Amino acid sequence: MVRVTDYLYIVRDDEILNGEPIIWGTRTPVRAIAETWRMGVAPEEIPLGMPHLTLAQVFGALTYYSDHQAEINRYIEQNRIPDELIDPLARNL
Image (cartoon, rainbow, N blue to C red; front, side, top):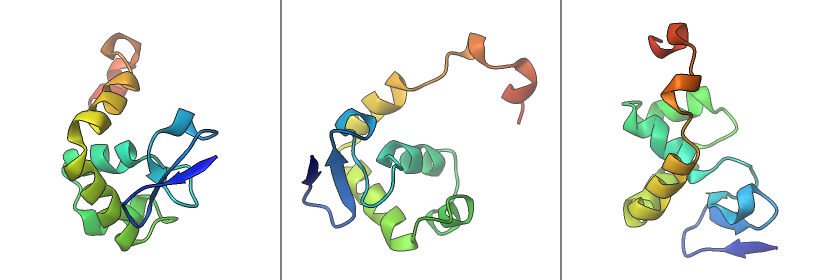
């Protein structure tokens, strides 16, 4: 079941990522956009790497993240790949 939020582009779908906040019409979680932004990628550049998203959707996700940082940070931590599982060559990218 899709549940709308108070945010224009953000929904929750129990069948996608167990209800984690996503961009409507995609399977892209808010956390993916927040993580990309936190790595220093400008919002205007995020659609270059995620061309299925519009700039408005990116800003919508960042607005949601700004208002729900603790929640999204929990999702980020839950989905973090432990350092010991990352190939040492990939860590330097």
